[in-house]
Image 1 (cartoon, rainbow, N blue to C red):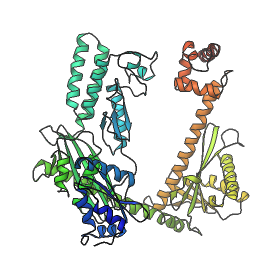
Image 2 (image 1 turned 135 degrees about the horizontal axis):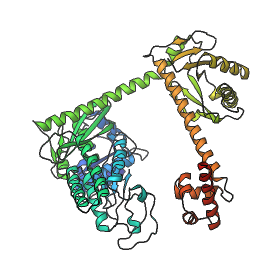
Image 3 (image 1 turned 30 degrees about the vertical axis):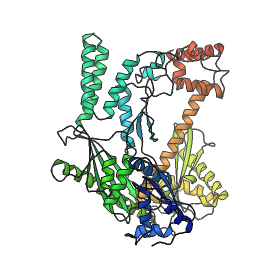
Amino acid sequence: MATISPELATKLRLLPTKPGCYLWKDAKGKIIYVGKALNLKNRVSSYLTGKPDRAKTARLVARIADLDYIITNTEAEAFELESNLIKLHRPQYNILLKDDKRYPFIKVTTKEAYPRVFVTREFVKDGNRYFGPHTNVKAVRQTMRLMEWIFPIRRCSRTIPKDKVMFERACINLQLGTCTAPCIGKITQDEYMKTVELMIRFLKGMHNDVINELKIDMQKYAEELQFENAAITRDKIKALTDVQKNRTMFLTDFKNRDVIGLYKEEDKAAAVVLKIVEGKVLHKETYPLSQVEDSSLEEIMSVFISQYYAQVDELPHSILLQLEPTDMDSLNNWLGNRLAIPQRGEKVQLINVARINAFNYVEEQKLAHMRKASRTILPIQELKEQLKLHKLPRKIVCMDISTIQGTDTVSSAVFFENGKPKKSLYRKFIINTVDGQDDFASMAETIERFINQTNKDEELTPDLIVIDGGKGQLNKAYKKLKSVTDKDIIMISLAKRIEEVFHAGNNISILLPRSSGALRMLVEIRDEAHRFAITFHRQRRSKRTIKSDLDEIKGIGDKTRFLLLKEFGSVEGIKNAKEEELAEVKGVSVTLAKKIYSHFRNINSMKEK
């Protein structure tokens, strides 16, 4: 039996026999474990009586110094509370969904008179509809883009009353066809809610129902000779039909199911949930799990189910499991007897698909970890050996120039240490001393300015500088380097055509094997420098374009420019705006609106001439 303090002994004697959650704390008051119980007194006392059955429990008990608990009305409430407390405190001895970020939901604000739809990472039981969580953020974005024009539901934050029009102007989404503008009374609430209900059915996976409804609408438009609306509806049907074709049929009873597969190896584990809607696999969700070293698959399954379904808005018809979790009866009662462990047939095949996906994920993570560990030093060692360098190039800087016909020329210097990018040491430069397009001179200025920075910050001093180009570019760059510093810095260049490497002082290029880790590292660093330079160049060019177009108009300052761009979205939007629309912008007088309108009309007329 564990040794406990008199204060903790008193708490144990006073524990209620009600359901709830208990929180074990260490000597510093830190929460180290959160659990749930149908009977708090019995469950909590069991930790401190007898010998722990597992090493993990023994380590937990050895650190227990205090206890806190929360009583709930039912065991079902305890399941949800436990999940929330684990996410909040992330205790050391609980199995955790590995990602710190919350997975996104698609939220439909059905409590509003005119519901909105948007992506959120906050799941709150507020009476609105939530669809998710989704582990594939890219798929969520694709779904939202698809829904924009199939279901033109508003995404703004305006408060729109049910029976009163309070706004005179709609936003640009009305013109884009992605909103029906209930804010200005362009659609009745009944018509709007019909679209919302269709979208909800789509999000639930009931694509056949949605397609049938749209077919009825298309027929109606055709009969009323509204051929444009009929064509738009036809295109929506086609888009949904294409989505249907990409889904594989598994079951023929058209019921919604979740299929959960699990795999664990050493300290890594993952759970995969296959979402089956109307008999077809809708999508796959993968959840990495951590702190699983001493936990059985049955325990991991139990913890995953309780954490996952605590944040699900609508349960499926059934939940198919790979194996029986601990607390099977409690979980099943909480989930309305939806848990099932299939023994044969198509459902067992689905379980195997989920389990294989979980296995593959864990294997990929192991391989990724191995690749990550090896890339930190092995490619650097290979580079030293292949190029016969006199020292290990742990700190590598790559420089690149970006310009268009000599305008807005900029350069970048990205910093990699031990094969990994160190973005806090990235540098970018606006080229000041070069007129027109001269990459040699631009690189020379970049080298000199970067070396000046290394004189102020020794951490920036690299072992190796990489530039993009061939032998000629390298010779000129190396000459500049030697003229501005006597530091021991090696310089090489990487030519794009066949990825050959030139080393300063060596007239013969070196061809590294395509399979070479050193070559892959150099290409990655070169591409990162190119990306960083281009991004900076685009930002500069964009700012210059905006300023040159608007700064020519007397009376427009930074604040007015910001308000105009905020209202019309771009310079092009301002160009196309009418005088009265410009005058409605805060801070723009009628006189200034006339100036802006006339300025852009004059530019257009000059272009036409």
